[in-house]
Image (cartoon, each protein chain N blue to C red):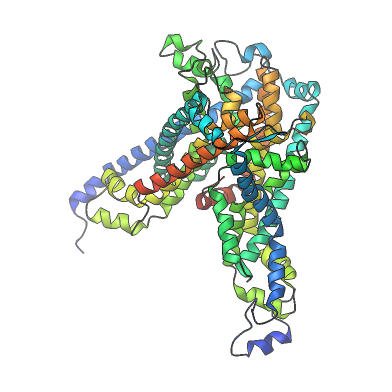
Length: 314
Length: 289
């Protein structure tokens, strides 16, 4: 299309005020109709599968529903969920998992970003290498690590160099080590994507601040502690929040690596919701558990917002 | 300015030495970290070439004693489902990507550049869904799709993913920044909104469209929970679903499981290598995933 060559453009260009695109004075209803038409797919998909779905979930959480018969249950599902030992176990497990994974992956990602930020050449190559685990399917990751953690596998053999008893140890078969093994798998696969967020955050810090600090005599650790970290607070917040939301929803690795066992040591809320919903067909109970988990995720995000002050002044 | 003092000149070689030592230490740290990141992949690739006994033998061997490249053919031969899963994954990921990018672009255009009643409310509603975790809608989505008879079908997998809040947000932000003059010229020429969208806005939005396309494809390719809920028929499985069921059935054949893992991962590796710059940039700005 030849933009700007039409004589009409010149006529209009001479007007004191150019015609505003989407001017409300010129048949606005047509633009409205166009807008709604453009939004129809999004409204159907997001409206249907999020808003209507939320309504259905809330409705179901007060009923007993197995896919065929619907029976009013009042608060029974919530009472059942709160009183259920499995649900307690799943919540404890996932909080333990969240604390360890978020702490380790944040520290690891930040450390690697700081190192990567200081080298002179080859940044891109390292970044690509580190990024590979992040694009690997969680199922593939789970399967590879199940093999590495199997008795006599690579992890056991490497640890066995120091502790000989560990050689034939089944990391995923012991209630004490199964969840830490899954944590390791997750940290390995997610640390890199958070590192990339940190690298971007570091590049946003104006260099003149470092120069000013250097003149004042602050270098090395002091500059890191007093300048870099405080200015990186919004990025740290982002990484911690994304990590929290992600870890509280862990499912794939558990499904592939341990199926919730041994002795429910790797049972997590999403795994329980899945089991209750799609193996036992207790859709009402599953929905109630989902809402409780939703409330927990929401609360954690709010708490973190209070503790990590994100406002930064340059 | 005073000239450089004798003292400073004397310090320089040692300072340069310190910098070199520091750089070497940094590269060693990065290299070790890289080894940890790549290690499992390397072991898995060698493992895929071993026979069933060697892959789980103790002590583990790094390189296969005898290479078995036929593992890659055996998997496809013994499990005819395998190529099928690969095709399913490609088809579903491509469909979701095309539809999601197109619908998000349409919605983004409306939000960014058109005036209509309820614009702010609708946009905020879209943003609000970013806060809702997947598992809250897992059961109701299943029940809704069941009412339409879409459980155990491809549309059942595709439908909930063809308009995403994050995608609409990305497109809206990008399209807001396109200068209005370009659009005005087309409007004055008598172009409809549709023409403006397809001829002016879409070509200018290629960077954002590419970013969204990569994330959609990657997300759909690796998605596990939703296909697991929707699909029962192994004919319809995606690769992650397929190898998960495969691995629980053939616990002894770790080498085959590793072959399957490689088949699942390699397409993503190519995707990343081709679109590296886009991915790095967008992970940094959107927080990824």
